[in-house]
Length: 96
Length: 461
Image 1 (cartoon, each protein chain N blue to C red):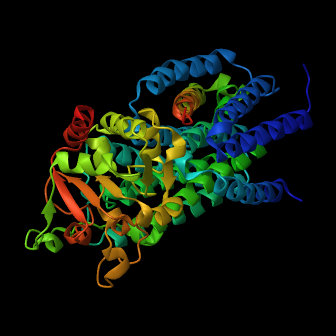
Image 2: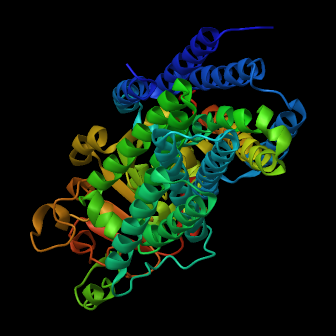
Image 3: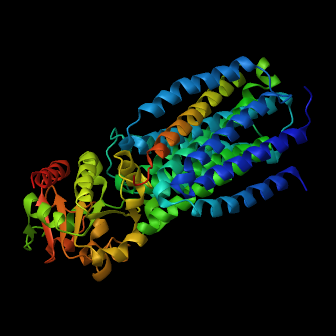
């Protein structure tokens, strides 16, 4: 199996997992769901690290700059997304 | 350290599993915080492991970027008001989109330096950049509308759909050329066209359809991460992007269903532009009005009261007054429930967050299916800043544009009080039949002032 085909397998199966997990999320928590998916879609930071940290980046300011800004943007999402999700979830309290 | 490829693949699998359990935690408020912690661990683990990857060096740039992100992101998240959550989410979506474009561009330059690039990789790169670009500009427009920098009226012009089709055609053609014979100009051209398409796709969608737009862009940001995973052949990005993508897609579906509209109908846009006409004869029919004293007396002597909050409550900043009202009634032994329609607010679940913020316990906040059977047993209902979602025409009037939309059946209760600023119709522009029913009374005034008035009446007794 080619690497592309493996990738398609992973992608398709992950869509099914996502479908089942997300339908289980209670509607009351749909806002924190969006906030946290925002944070985890910033897993793109790994890709950004592979660009910014690549040996090729040493030879090109362009690659360095693209990589740096990509890491920064993804990191804003990671920190911002997780912190705001935490803040929201801490508000959900039971009847005392 | 010399670690092999399988080590990294395995570590990324662990991170993926942590994300899945993290999302699963959101199935109940009790487990949600723990879930969020799992997702954070997954992210931290993935980043740390990547630092040890043999093809990653230049730690200065990486740490610089991460630190800059923390410095910008954390204060932003700490200070944001809960009413402004939709804007924050839209802004964060745009960052993911732009990051995907930058990573695709950077990856292309890296490979171009080495010489030969396969057609498959070029296709993946151009798709990644295009999805990222659409997410970026689309989210910027959504942010602008939510932040009221741009008007919320949909921008519709002749030939709009033809223009979009033309741009999509051009993107596909140029992408094909790029895969066949790549150069930077073609890459840039496709990206610029996709940026333009992002603007054009969101502009015609009305401000009130924002819950769908925000969910859709949430989905795109996931697909953008997945596409990047394809270019880097990184299963963690592919799987995580797919999780986020399906999450956004499901939320869009739920929102559309709650408005009884198709996704295509929302995307093609223009809803709400012809709305004003329908409201013409609004003031002709007689309707009752009530004073806050009357309403307070009813609520006080009721055994069960249901509150239906809408976005109007948030606009009037009435949630804290509502919480006081809840406490006053609760302390008198009145059972108070809150009924939330899926599209109340500007993003999915927005109203639940606003109520939670004002410290109303989540177990008295109910969803549409849970609460609808209770309306016929309720002694009184208080509607605060909601309109279309309680319109019985959605059930009874086949010619109404709302017909078929799931509603909160407030009209079935013994007595309904609606706090209203004026007789203006809701965003759909459809007149609300509820106001003219015998069991309905209107309390005219600002939502916050009326709620405070109710609290004062209760305190006086």
